[in-house]
Image (cartoon, rainbow, N blue to C red; front, side):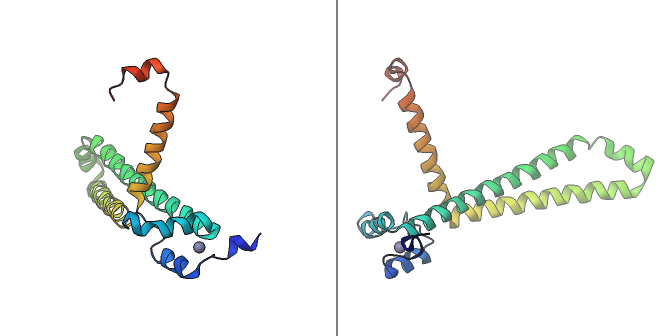
Length: 155
Ligand SMILES: [Zn+2]
């Protein structure tokens, strides 16, 4: 491993960037220039920026997957709801209690993962990072579109 990868080329700027988790999207464009230049020049900081942004993306993905999972679980529980009274009569109170415990666990899990997702989206630059990726993809797709389709699209 080269020493350039291990050491920051400007420790003062590097420390500031580290305290921001290498997110400069909140700074005004004039102030951003120095930091952008440093991120371009310093392999250590640019690697860390990439790491933190993919971490934010992964957190956003995981929390939204968790919310989807609990939503799915609740949908399944809602689906077996007609069986609830049958189970209550045939099998007794235990099944009835368990069903309601599962429903409240599902609701709690859904609420918790939605709060976690909201926290990830508000405290990290994940939305702009993911939005940037989406915009890049859209641009790539548009570049590949045949000229005939492009001329049909309103500018
Ligand atoms: Zn650096």
